[in-house]
Length: 350
Image (cartoon, rainbow, N blue to C red; front, side, top):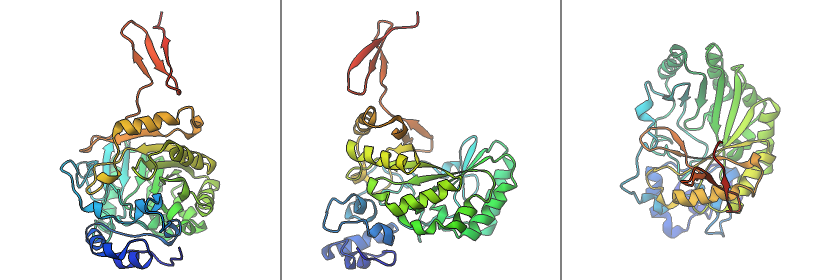
């Protein structure tokens, strides 16, 4: 698909053959509530002739997003309840989220911050708000890691990123800076020498967590962009969301994790989808997720195993939700299940 600029409206989706003209009114209603943006790089990956295309499902709005369920929440993981000042989320003792910007180069249709991001969202921190956020980090010496997220922090210019990193450089108790981003996949040309230098300007150990959900997202361009980061000494890990119709298949999930490892990105988190408004069509059951994660054991290398987690609604943090491979049998021994489903007895300590 030959697209030269981001697609942001229902009319542009129709013109790009990503949405049928008969759906334009319904899609416009979705776009009026939730931000829409599809970068040219992502648009080029979509097969408009495949109604089940897993890339389109992640980025092309769907009328199903107008269906809201009682259990869904505007702030499903409870960011607001742990935000002492604008732009800071301090949920865990030794680390904070720093949300300097609430815009993205693309908008995922399952985003758990969909009520906060986009042109109608919380916007970019003002200079006064950013000063207060940095002051909070300075005042709390227990903060060992600062995680830049949002929004996507890599939409900031290298100049602004450098300025922000130089401010973090002056805080001695901050040892780790981590960026959460989709940019190497959705706009790989943005990862140039100036941006790489900006990410390293803090002088701290620097990590980039790349969000991708399907192996087709790891194009040669995306892998080259990741290599530019890794070759500069930045460690990369992955984040993915388990999504119905995208990667809820053991072979697809295995291919995705192998693609990360081949790109020198360590699989990190596989998120169970959050209870964000209008996203029920993406959610599968926890039992289905556990079965898929169990299917990875023995199927792919240990290097390819992500941690399956759930963000507990209400701001209570993450929980590992993989099915246990071991259970007490009631007789003092344990039953251990291997990757083929076979059960074995393990003796008690004696």
